[in-house]
Length: 325
Image (cartoon, rainbow, N blue to C red; front, side, top):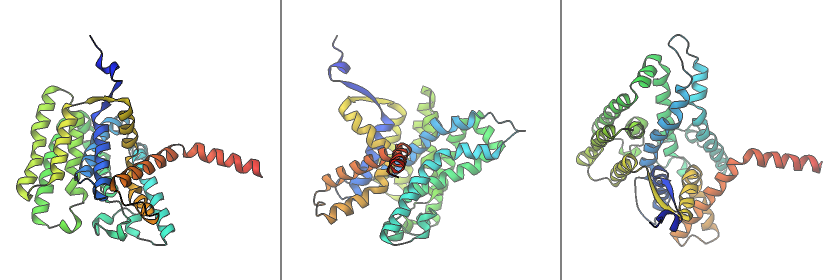
C-alpha cells in the first residue's frame, strides 16, 4: 500500500495553528483592501481561550493551593507570566512609534483606547490586544477567589459551559439595551463569550462533550437573527467547529512551515503591518495589495525571530562593545 504521507512529504498541522495563520491573514488582507474575510480577530480571541485552558490553566493548577494556604503573589506571577509576554512587546512597540512620530496618546499606553474610539490616536492603538488583556484581567479577579478557583478545578467543563451561555446573553442584552456601535462593540464584557467558547472547546475531550459543545456553541448564530448577517460570526462559528472536530490536517511540509511561522508571528504581524504598508508607500512600492500582505508577514516573522533571540543578540552586542573598548 502506498504511503501517501511519505510520497507527498506530508506532515500533520494542528488545525488551531492553521486557523491562527488564516485569521491573521484575514486581518492584514482586509486592512490592505485585498481579500475581505472579516472575522480573524474573533477567532484569535476564541483561540486565546482555547490556549488558556491548554497552557496557562495547568500551570496554575499544578501549584496545588489549598483553601488554607493561598499565596496570592505566586498565583499572580504564574497567571500573568504569559500576559506579560503580550504586554511587553506591545508597550515597547507603541512607545517606539510615539518617539519616532513625536506623538503621545495616553490611552494607547495604558491599553484602554477601545473604550474611547476605534481610530483613537490616528490608529496608533491595538484594540484586539487591549480587549484580550482586559479579558485576562477579568479572569484574574475571578480566579483569585479561592471558592471559585476550586470550583473551576473540580467542574472545569461545566463551569466554562455555563459561563459561555451566561456571557453570551449578557453580550446580547447589553448590545440591545446600549448602543456601542460607535466603539464597534470592542469591549471586554461584550466579547468575553468568544474567549469562553474557546475554553469550552479545549475542555471537550470526549465525544459526548464535543456533541454538547457543538450544540451549545450554536447559540453564537443567534447573533445573526438578532442583529443581522455578520460574516465575523460565521468565521468564528465555522472556526470553532473545525477546532472541535478536526484536530489536525495533512499538508506538504513546505506549506506547513509557512503556516507555522505565520501563526507564531501573529502578534508582531498584527503590531507592525500598518507601518510596513506605510514604509512601502514611502518608496512607491505599495501598488499591489498581495505584495503588501507578503511584505507585512515577512516583516512580522523577521521581528518575531529577532525578539525571540533578543537575549542572545544583546549578549553578542555587549561582547562587541567590550572588545571595542
